[in-house]
Length: 276
Image (cartoon, rainbow, N blue to C red; front, side, top):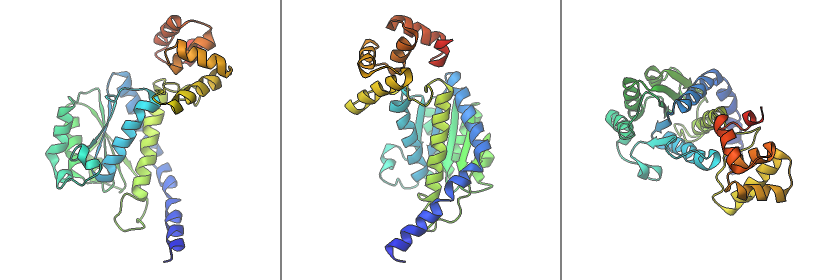
């Protein structure tokens, strides 16, 4: 193949991924609902996987912190072999049934938590060991695989299975399988955060302004949510100690920061409910 032919073929193959994910929407919904339930009980969403699957889980978990303002302990990504496995292969880590269990033991897993095991092949021992341990302590378990009738499905309460077809490079699951996993993890984390009040309309109202770009984005979010001008948004943003959600409530309900915090607490963090 020429470069153009190879790229065209990859693009053609990728177009089927979203449709393959669509077929699994009922199971994705069940897992997302379970995540909302876990959060409302004070539990956590814990992803675990090896290789590309583990890296995607770690990525999704890490991005929840700035996007939704949650602590790093609320959505957690575990990868076989630990942090160094993010960039280097750790020999034998994914083949161990006990390492997955130990990683969850180290997190003090409880029955309030949701554990999502991710394995493109659907048979990774690290994930199976973790899911079995999670079940033993009463945690809710889910699996995400890119094979139908996958082995890990038998070890989970809810099984998501997506068939993306053969890879452009045979067996290279970082391609279509990785894309499918990324799409599904996006869905689970985003919609579960919507479910616990981290979004107002389609705005990231709990975003953490950790740099200049995000400070300006925060002000634009306040402007969009309240239809106010930049000056008012900036003023209330500072009065709210750079808490975007609080600034929005202060403007929409014409109150000070202290009253706004009370309103949000009574509304369980949902901006819309402060307007009732």
